[in-house]
Length: 110
Length: 115
Image (cartoon, rainbow over all chains, first blue to last red; front, side, top):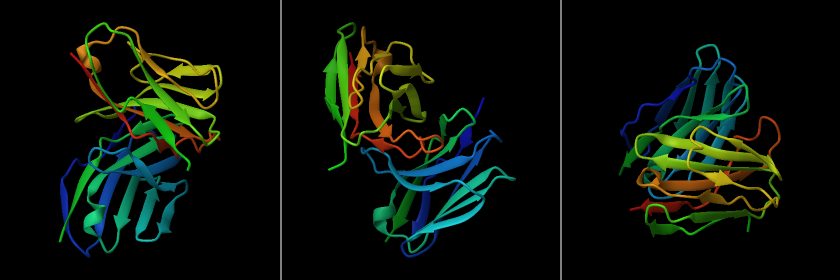
C-alpha cells in the first residue's frame, strides 16, 4: 500500500516565525511531489511542486525534497495569520497517480 | 477567468434518488478527476479521465459513474445514492502532460448529504 504520511497537527507557530511542515512517502518510485493549501471549507490550492532533490524557493515558501530519505518538507518564512490552513502533501507514483497525505493543520498565532 | 465550475455546490437528497454533479473547466485541460474528502481520510480519487472518451477508476469508484463526452465536461453520477456517499466532492483538472498531472486546479466543491 503506497502511503504519504503527515502529522495531522495542529502545528502552532508564532506570527513571523518559520513554519516547517513535513511529509514522508513510501513509494521509492515517486518522482514528483506537491504541496497544496486548503482553507477551512474551501478547495485545495497548489502552492508548490518539486521534481528534483534539493530546495525550491517561491517567495516565502521553500519546498525541500530528499529522495534518499523519502522525505518532503515545506518551509513558510515570516508566517502570517493568513497562512493558517491545512497543508496537503501529495506524491505522484510510478503510474502517474497521486497519493495524498491526510494533511497538517497549521495555526499561526498573532 | 480560468476556473473549474461544479454544480450544485450544496445538495441534500434521499437514498436512491439519482443525481448528477456537473463539472466544467474552461482551460482546455485534458485531464479531469473527481475526489471525495471525508474528515480524517483526506482526498480519495473516485474516477479520472485522461482525455475525451477515456475514463478510469480511482481508489473508491463503487457507487459512482462518470462520462467524458466533451473535453470541458466531466459529470459525476450517483445512480442510487446511499448515506455513506455523504461527503464533500471536488472536481479537478490539469493539462495532462506526463508528470504534471499533479498540478491540479480544483473546483469549489459540492457538499452532498444523503438521508
